[in-house]
Image 1 (cartoon, one colour):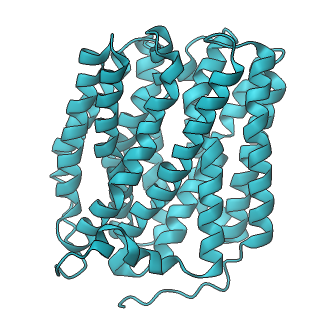
Image 2 (image 1 turned 45 degrees about the vertical axis):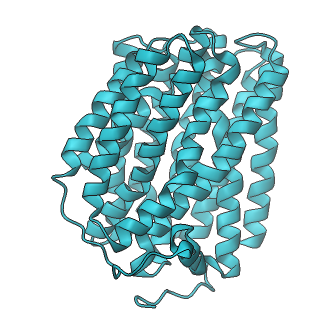
Length: 396
């Protein structure tokens, strides 16, 4: 629980303030690039680290080293890059290259230690959400740091603390055989064998596609709120994490009542509703609609991303589970959000006449991810069936 708290405290400290910080320091045109650091970190590292954790080294030691490095790079980003966007982006890229693999490793740790995963994982994972909420309250409401470097320094301190703490986590030895490393293992081709059935392919495709509109949320909603003269935007965005706590605790009941397919479908529908609220609210800067859109975050994130992690863990053979969680990070946070970040950055820079944008421009901006989410939902409803997937053998 403490590990999960710190894991997402780090991310939550700067992720909702990064756009306004860069806007205030003359980097509005490259805001999307700092959020591209997260997908690139997700693409480059998880396969390798997941394979290493599965076969060679204890998960807690890998997490400790990666968090210490990511905390150092976070500290350097505002210290040396405040007046140079290239230097700033360079350190943020190094930070996320180290941080993103730990998202999958942290989940693999919890899933390894939990008894009843569907019941216990959401309860433990909720402490990550509490960590994100706590970070938002500290950096935005207490420190009033939405446009300052304070969130980055707070995140750095959290990362260094978790790096040291990770070495005290329960020991999780590698499950596989420490055989010679092949190119196919480094590229993750072995774990791809676990995702060859038609339902898996539809599942991964839906996860990938919904991650594209997700990329516009944390990068541009804080700027959207500020343009509507809503104070402490990062603090307001923690309301979404509060709703995440609610949906996480209800998730076991939803699994029992509706099954994985309809939990995922409800999450996809929530994305469409959220962007619809933002689009309708934009012309008149309707505050309650904007807040309602933020409050949809619990269903959007938990019913898609957390549910997907549980689904993967149940349907992947034991020796490949940590690597499969890395594959989840690659598909969703990596390729999906990477493409979405580039698209959102292009749209923002194309339609917005100023740093904050006009109301009509914001409406156009939010209509695009709304339509995309609707298409993905329809595809998933018609194409995904969970019942024909066989439970994997424990040994291959």
